[in-house]
Length: 70
Image 1 (cartoon, rainbow, N blue to C red):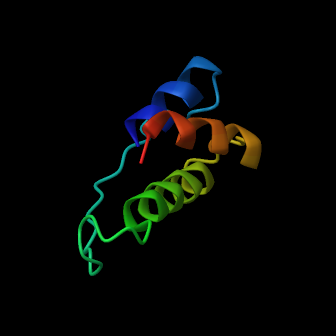
Image 2: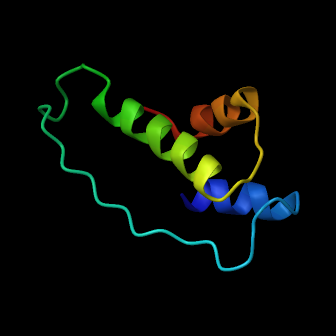
C-alpha cells in the first residue's frame, strides 16, 4: 500500500486523504510455494488503485509488484 501511495503521489494521481487499514487472513501455509503472498500483494495493488482512483495501468501495477519481491 505504501509503495502504491508513493508512486501515485509522485505522479499527482493520489487523492488527498487516501489511506487504508489492511488485514489479511492467510489460510495457505507459509512457505508452501503456492504464491499466496504474491497473490495478496497483487490483489491489494489492484484494489487500492481502484479505490483511490489512481489510474495506474496494469503494466504500471505489474512493475510495482515486481519491486515487492516474492
